[in-house]
Amino acid sequence: MDRVGQRRSHADRTRGRGAGVTTEVLPPSLAEIVDDFAAVSPRDRLEMLLEFSQSLPPLPERYAEHPERLESVPECQSPLFVATEVADDGTVQIFADAPQESPTTRGFAGIFHAGLNGLSAEAVLAVPGDITAHLSLTDVVSPLRLRGAAALLGRVQRQVREQLTT
Image 1 (cartoon, one colour):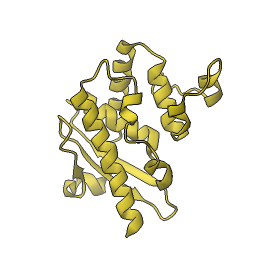
Image 2: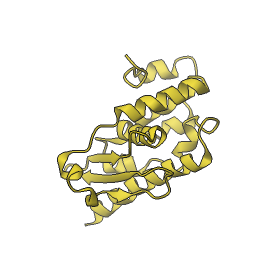
Image 3: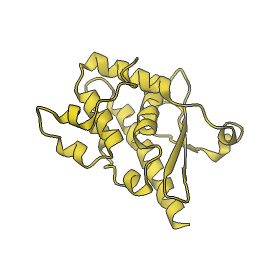
């Protein structure tokens, strides 16, 4: 099984060391991803990013057939589109699409999907805007790509806020 599918328990991740301040403020699913990236070599981080790109689910029909319902994230170097839905119970669903030929962009979308999808709106909105700095990718991914990932999170959070106020 790939690293994306191998999630450790919180106790396993923090055994023998204190939980980082950064991960303490994150939802457990996203904190686990941050910890997993920090625990491996730079080369393995790139491999994990590729695995997240491959784990990004396809768009449901309502978006695949109506791409105009997705919002573009122009700060990304590659085409990236996102939509969020906040259910009546307050849980957030994230839908993203990027070309298969853009594994870095898809990887960041996959990380946010795996780490935030299905969480409460409050949990999604509480994720700090500088989360990409804590993914341990600054030495293997360009600042421009990291800025695109931060913009993706910003779009998700703005869409969630807008749905909560309507």
